[in-house]
Length: 295
Length: 286
Image (cartoon, rainbow over all chains, first blue to last red; front, side, top):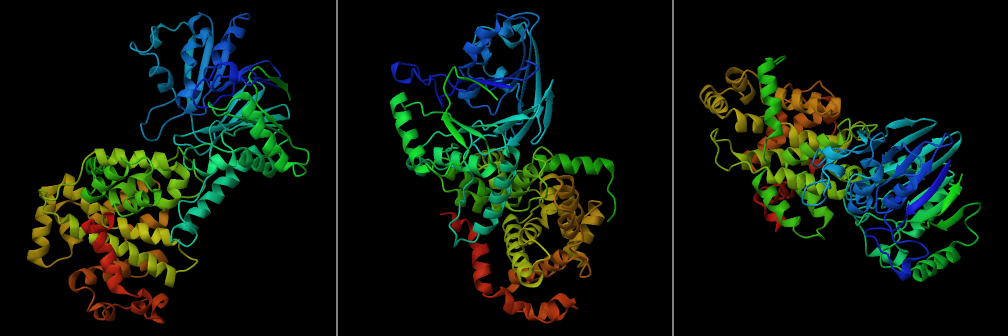
């Protein structure tokens, strides 16, 4: 199985001289199974460059799994060029929204409207398919199995585990470790804490032992303190999670849009220094646009 | 009450989807959600005290979509599972659907209903803690109390004429409310409450105790706690609980309660009353 990062930036695309090394595109990860089937995790602006790379080998058969419906994870979808070429097939997977009742097809429908985009959904040339996933559902994509897990974000966010011939990866999409809304002396604390621990155990179990864990690590631990409830994680939280679940490699992603390459490396070095000696065999890296990894 | 006609069944299910929330909670939710930094605790407090919103949030978290290993009856835990923002927007959606009118065609006393439900909820939780510790989840006690009369709201909103007739007969013939409802509606609020909670996949024990809450003792530990809580709450609403001892003296209490002094276990009754009162009047939300 191979992974390639096409977009590692959080929230909004941030091109420019300060983000040249890590890249400014928002979330998109290409996964190739051993049988060379294509799985795309999220359709941020990074998906445009991926689309260009696919045009050399038509027809395209793409399985796009959306972690959630926030802009930075769906914004590139209308520019996924294979959609406009007859003979291609694009299947989109994701969660239905319990508040609006809308399914994953809404991510396209909402963007391909007259006022916002010149092409209507009905005018797409590829064969489009949508599948709404139930939480915990497993999907077979040729020689791989994709399993989704509910994580914690201001909208339903599915984390995806992909298993292929004994190799595995887990991508969180956007995730903030659960926190208790009560202080320990308040009446609701224990009740809440019980559910938090159940959730954490369930999430850990879904990631257990993966070869590559790709985690929303937007903030430093200092920043994280002031961003409670924003739905993102920290470098420290990601490392602790990776250690807990016995992941072999950790890739920190969803880089803050305001952070330059130099700043990103500086905060990362500080974190790595703090964890020096306690990582064991865990290898930790910053995800970088264009980087391809073979598991 | 065993069965209702298919037509009534469909009518009741359709009704609940459209039931609006209680006015005080709607006002408070709209107010809270205007502030992006609203305290999650405050929001939970409102949802916990509004039977309509609580039932709808629990319905979502217990739906097959989330396929949770066990059924959830706690709003706090629902917030962990659904996420705060989802719960906030669900609550906001329900609020926007409208409010139960203060004045309604059934002349149903909403304030009294709410007061009784909240008191029963708090009492049932206390009783479970004290007399069914380890056997029953105190959250189940609270939710059972909060929702045990929910069927009445459904009648008031969607079968006001029938409920009006039932209430008149109840007063004239001095019969219990559920008997009058059976006469004029064809079923009673306990059956409807159970039917709805069953459809929404609430825990079976909870469904049963709502269905049987007029049947007296002999059911489950949860059912017995709910029965006593309902009884106590009725007396507390009548005379602020001055004659509670008498109410209990009339009942053949099951063994669970016999060795203990229920009233002592409940602690400060005035505090319980004023807490429920505060939520009903909206004072707690200021």
